[in-house]
Length: 252
Length: 261
Image (cartoon, rainbow over all chains, first blue to last red):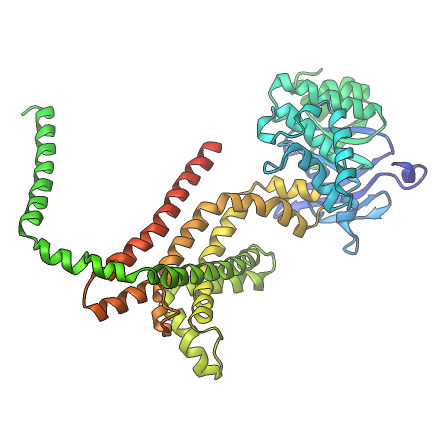
């Protein structure tokens, strides 16, 4: 499912990205590439622009300036069919955003059917497979409100996987969870990473960053301050701001 | 005087006033005359089955047609009002404010009489066509605001999640946002339906034939013929038989949604 990326254009290629909300400039010139199969973790204080950067990647926010290429396709070009590009990018949200009026099964099949045009049987087969991957096969007929936060987030991951995306974006996937439910979600993400999924993760889970990330990026005030391997950025940060941030969240 | 004694005294005197008023009505009212003027069994019996097969049926048909038309208009208006394109928004606002600001009767007269004068052409279908369209136009304005509120009550993350799965705006609206919005607005929409049932009583201005009378016109005409108030009481009871279950259902639905949150 990822063959066309091999040797081709990188999954994500961002040049000089700016994004303003009114007078507030949230992103001030970001250059950001993600390689095929890479797991990139974005860290930084709240308001640093990590989530906005992630949301620009799948077109939920429109950049003020700069270019974003997804597998070689410029999504900032008004001619581009952004909906089609989005089907290749899975997104997982802090608040899960499952569809509360649909059962778990229908949450997983609706986009397969309405966007990819799969028939019911095929869509359900894929849904069951993905649900098994996140360990929730027994919840297939439940409504989301009957699930714990951790289970809801795992269903949300399965829902994104049903579209066979080439890459996955995670926007603080564990921030809304009770502490004892964080582990099950991180396990699923770790599993995905080990299977070679290209992932960009905004998180405050430094353990995950340390052990799973190929690269950690520290952002502050709309710019990338520092990036490198987890041990470089998390253990021996060069920049003052990075050191201060890591001290504040008690890592170093 | 102790506070509890005073409270008791006030309560006692409130009951006293109630009993006195009731007593006065019972003693001084001319029950015989009232009975024959409003509760004449023969006249009431004569109204059946036509009060149901013609009048109540017409009221129901007019209401449902106006409601259906109003719903379609309202959906379009609500989407226009939420549009990022200014002129669409302005048109929707103008429409909504205009028809919410006018008495429904004026709109009905406009549709039934002013349009034919101006265009030399009238909306076909007589009372049914003109009335339902006139009332549907008004209902659309009210329900547009209801639908918009419902759509805005659906968390933004729902649209974003749907879009992130590759759905177009229209698909996300159709399959994800609107179904949830409609769940939220079923109670207020049912209230609107009740208002419409009552508003069909205005259709008399459009002129009616014996087969196109709705409940109010039917009762009023019979009242004139028989020179008796009973027909009005009967149609009032028919109205209540329709509206009370609806309002009761709304109250139950509202309780249920409140509990589900």
